[in-house]
Amino acid sequence: MAVDIKNLNHNELNDLINQARVRQEELQKEKLNEVREKVLNIIKDEGFTFEDVFGNRAPGRKTRRTGTVAPKFQNPADPSQTWSGRGKRPRWFNDALASGKSEDDLRIPS
Image: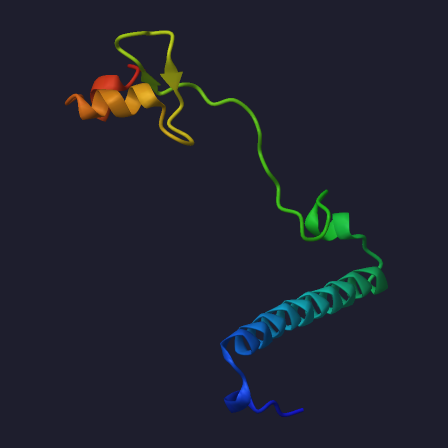
C-alpha cells in the first residue's frame, strides 16, 4: 500500500505519522509476545519451569526493592529534618546550599 505523502496537508501528515508509530508499537509488542511464547515453550519442552530457569519472577517483571534508607544529610537549623540523598532535594537542603554551605557541611557524620 503506497501513500502519496506529497498530497497530504500538515494535519493529515501528522495523523499518518501518529498512526505509523502506534502500529510500530503494536508490531513490537506482538513480536515480544511471540518471543516470550517461544522461550516459555522451550523451557516447558525441556521439562523445566520458568522459576527453575529464572527464579521466582514473572516474565517481563523487574524486581523493585523497597525499604528505608538511612539519612545521609541533616538540616543544621533543625536536626529533626533529614534526607537520605535519594529523590528530590528538600527545600532546606537547597536553601543551605544557596547560603554557601556545602554538601559535606550537611552530611551526617558516620
